[in-house]
Image (tube, rainbow over all chains, first blue to last red; front, side, top):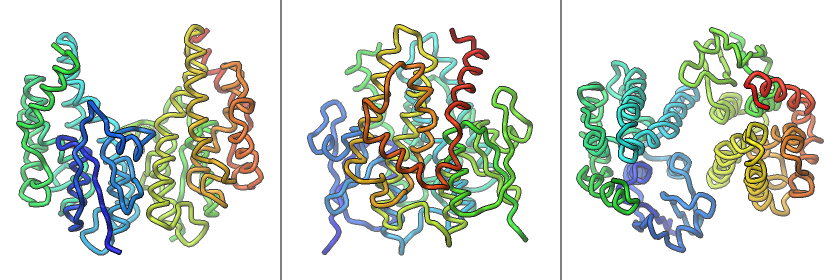
Length: 219
Length: 219
């Protein structure tokens, strides 16, 4: 039986982009079902009743939820091509640590940039830049977080690159001025076709955020 | 070279207990270094500079942080004895999902029970019980979350059992009355020696919480 793979996703999602990248790297054919997060479908609620969030991978009818769990699942099921996780247990734990750090910190701080009140903007920007600088420290002088080649942490962080212009517009700062090594790293990653093809146009991210701010009545 | 394994931990920690259980299951000898969380040691700050939290496993001088990452590391390095993760990728993703759910929800809600203001106590209790009921639904009629035998999700949840009396005293409710299947499950788990030996005396948890409430000046 051929594998039936369906992805419930939203095109601008930093989480969804990771899954799309993993599927592209493994050369997996799948059906993409765009989800409207302001009007959730019965399928999404049925497949992820606990968190009610995208992305959800449905593999032969069975749902897998939570991005980094999905990516590891893809890596473990389709293990013969393009490994996504390091093979050494210590390097794997190290990669999981930084991917987890990005998940715990960056999304929420980034979201605050375009949802916060004007009086808190400076503090929020500072928190975001500090988080990126910490990641810049972890990158060090390596070309990629994975060392000599693109790896699990790179894959976890790179979707934020197409959100950078939106953060910069609402936060009124320059990420390149603050964290030049992160921007140089991102440009390096974008030379990889499976990365650039999985990322969305930054203008679409901006339009999406403008739409959300209107829907949520943020001035 | 023999493995040098050190655990930085705090005896009442639900996170630390999981690591102690994993080390016990694998039969790994290690040095235990109790940490005072109100007065963090230079060693802890050096080994976990990002989160500054216990537990930290130091294996041959190299630190591994974040509980579920540590447990998976232990399982992957000492892989010949007592597997902690399911061998099937879908079951593994499913186990990771529920372990992640427990990590994201239960600790913070449990902590609110003994830190909240009196007027919010009822709402906090309700949130905690709803979370346990959801887990009870996932357990269903299986003896363990892992099915017929104790597994990764069981290991993630069982340390909370020695915190139950503390939650009950401060929240003024009975977990057994609300979630009898969870309590029956916990009693079943406690028959396993490596579990009961890794868990601490509930009275010590209560004394620890009383001490913290005094230190934090909570009425």
